[in-house]
Image (cartoon, rainbow, N blue to C red; front, side, top):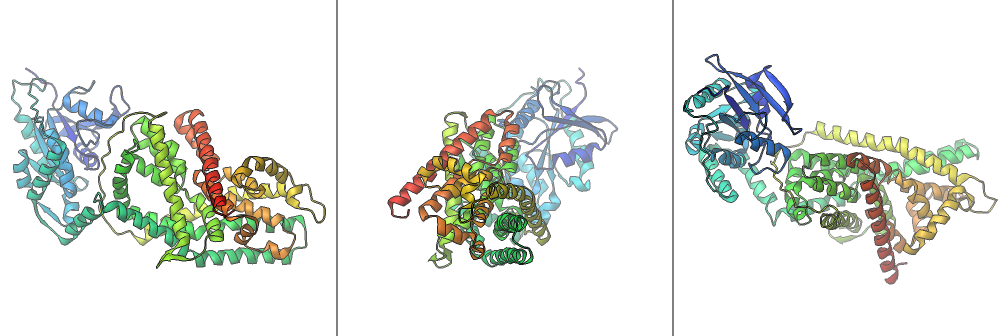
Length: 623
């Protein structure tokens, strides 16, 4: 009985090197399409054996188990079991294992081997394992698994001939009178914890030696990923970051502030009194300069983020957060998009495309704006510096950094509470699973850090030179016309002043004055515009040149109460997003329904919590 062409499939965890091995084995003899009925890529090619025969080689999507949790994993399961339309069931399975992460990859390997199908193990990336100080006994691993184990380095084409010979031998062991459909499917009922324990035993038995470097990395994981010690270490690290944002940036920020003030003084001295001089000093320099001075703080924040990403700690932070996120109906898959939202909600929302569950993805999109993006940092720091004393609550623990850390924590807690409510109402559904592979620890390179910081500095300065500049000039024009009578307030007489007075009626109950109302509308273009708007408003309304040179923080202390300042901070924790974020949300959700919902709930939260903060502060005599 003819069995038709033989089919071999490459299976294994993501990042095991399957695609590199597939490319090395098939060369140019490949074709790429989608599996029938699903938009999952299908790669197949011809593997030439030593005998001159060829077999069909299929590269299956990476999977962590045969209990599928995503479309990719479902395709892998169906192909292996012979249930995928348009794809014959493989005669031989090639299990691709990452030699440098053997224990993790052996969990899925056991599940595949339990099927009782002809298998060959490709122990891939043995060169990286050796670099990390691991020496693995392939014969011992083969004895433990009961199948041939071939050492390979796909990118260097090592072990390919031996692997092809092992595939041919496994094919020849299939009895002629049987077909894939008639072969038994043995099932061994083994629990996931049992598989993980056995994977650890097999891995330890196959490792001949390991260097101190590898043992140190293992000990670091036992500490940093510990269920009780790991989270406090993570939050302690974040606490240090926000302390550094204030303490390290102060001298650089003072230098930029002095430079902006000096430039304004030079323009005043060089030009006669005119609208042009007012535009340059009160509009451009006061507005844009008040935002640029926060560049050092933003770079310090991104420095720590880049270091955590480069060292491999960021993925471990996602693993630690999975437990907390599971409590609100999400998984660790949502952590990376939410973490990206600390830089900007736009890439964070776009990163949700990696989330397979549609309800999880929608919930993550809706709460991404509650992560404290870098555009909020200028708002937070100018208010904190103006109203919170620069004192120490403990040795090395500044009160200003503590307040900034608290604002970030409030945003995170708020996001988790909102996620819990959404998952039990408008995005109701079962929580999805989450498995991720830990990257190797490594030291960041100075070149990569410098490049990353330069890119983020350029993005910030480009926003300051385009969007913030434009909004500031438009606001200055609205504040400057019509001209006020001598001795009268220019803001009161202006178009912007009249508009702000109308909006202030709505905001007055939560302690916001006309100046804040004037700043909130343009801040919808970009959060940091709120700072430049306040600076421009106070510059326009001060006829005294000495008062014009006064720092924004001094102006705020003169016009605001502490209760108002605290309410303003609370508003920006939950403030509705900038227009760019709303546009991206519309694109990712294919309509205006969810962006409208996002705007509505954020506005309600911002108003409510700003009001609660203001009323509580007034009750304690801070109004």
